[in-house]
Length: 574
Image (cartoon, rainbow, N blue to C red; front, side, top):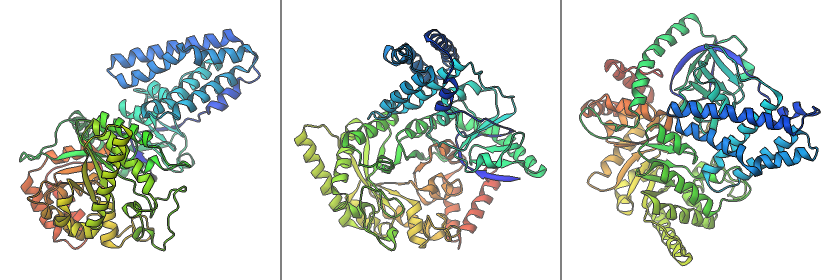
């Protein structure tokens, strides 16, 4: 028996038989055609076959009400009718270019063009173009559609969107070594309700055809050839969870209210633009933390103001009328960007990072970002959230930057809105001074990851401190309680946006401490809402009071576990 871990995509459990799918790349497929005597007629026949397949998929998806997936097929059908897309292939073939090479070059060039677009929706279409090229080449070769038995769990490096659509309802699940929650095929697997885990390290090396796989799409855990006892336990949990998760997902978009009537807002943490669709699907009521670092990573130059504005606007449009809290650039410590020279320090986590860089190193970059957020604020309820605030002077200086950005936009003739101003509570000093910082802001959000790190002097990215790093440590809970109490009687909204807001052990305690807004990972939002609906506020307040008097996070977790059991709450990750 082996256990592997990846990212769960659809919160269902399943057991099946592993079937390794060794997939050719687009270039390898094109290479299979090389040397074959194919003419324009053969190419046109393959295009017609491709059209019929896509039309059938489009009709099937439309009937089932899967409009978003049907749009993908519709986009691909439009490309097949596009004179420039197909015309360039025909032109190359007529000049004697190998058919496979002609298709490959046009597909790759078109993909690159879409990837360079500012509009995030259009950039996402790049994967659909590769998918279409894959289908065209398969039809030129005459390759058959994927064939699997009903008990199959597909093991692969990656799948294309249309491959996922073609196996829906015909397999038990999917596990891939590549991809993440934002990969297009993963989004489609989620939409189709296929238990899926992606990004599993060393997957292919550890699984072989015929292995029994127990797949937990909520926790992302994969058990290979479970023992008899493990399998029986898993199947019993699955049996209960199958009933529960169906009810949970049906109510994903409904409000989360305690039995005693109090509403708890559940919003999403986003790490990329595309996650907005996932958050919306799972019932997010807005965005509590929109991390902006992805704009700056994996490139040689910083993003433009327009690129960031388009991204922010896309998310605002997706999740309006909910509020969208956009965190300004948080780099330094474990997040380094090659084109931004940062000071070398022996302990960067305690050095010049995040807001401490805005005055010098990031002065120009942060101005472009603030201007982009201000412009996006015209389209919805947007908040600018400042990271790593330690005292009032940093808020005052940042507000001066925001005013300067407004003046620049006015001079440039660009429209902008009036965003709320907020801060992250990540440093103990900010938590302890919350009452003094409150008059300067509209909202605060407790970042439990860094707050835990700085409270416990335990590196969140460390190797030897992981066992000690736990956001349910009573000291961290006491700082949260202090912050809640400090804001009573003010109009400052308080939320939690760290990992604790996605932790089923932490959520009951956070509510019991007085938190009324949780910003969670999109996938877990329906489960968090489900948990909230099970309890009365007095029960949670009593639980939180007990937790504050425990001496270790282990004791706190055991307290919550017993609380769930005594309340007859069944979850597959307990």
